[in-house]
Length: 292
Image (cartoon, rainbow, N blue to C red):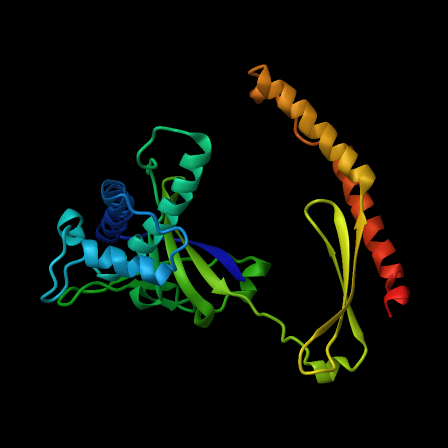
């Protein structure tokens, strides 16, 4: 899980702002260039691992050393650091996969997705953080000076959890004619208890699903392999009725060409569905005696 912190750039010089503008303008062009190549080559990375897809794209578009490539991304767009191409490749692959799925469902004739703006992504090798003194250093290529960008960490309570050692990547985004950095921080994941810590008895898990169902699973962890003791489902009929009623109203309005008039879910309906789901969860919890 990741938490994102927004940190504004503070009073940059013209030269530094020009550098940020250049990177911000070039990155979406690079992503769109890759997408265009994917379309021309008829590529489809769905069902392929990201690492494998990246290897295919690099062999096709990224000349390196003695290796030639059919296309040259370096000649298309020039970046101050080679890792901009790496992150652009990753973003383009993910965007292309989503676009292909959407194109199949919608039946659109679009060949490539529209890219008007795309926040540049910088991995851990492309920047250094100094939150105490208020700097983000953007690394450049060989023989070029790194760019030290002044930042201001907001004086808000939730920023107390900001830890520069846990920042895995950052994005550069323009917001209200000002640049901000979005810092992606890995959040703490609690340690899962071991079977010995849990004991020999069954472990009860209750989950409220997206379809308004409460499911109960009892698992015995005392053996080498977890053993499922019991599984039960509890249906929320009343919540389902509300869901079907909403879907019926929305469908009728859309068929009449009035999709803009589709009402949002009322608070009363939302609360009723939430209460019903919680009630089903309590029933499942009370039922655990039978499971034991």
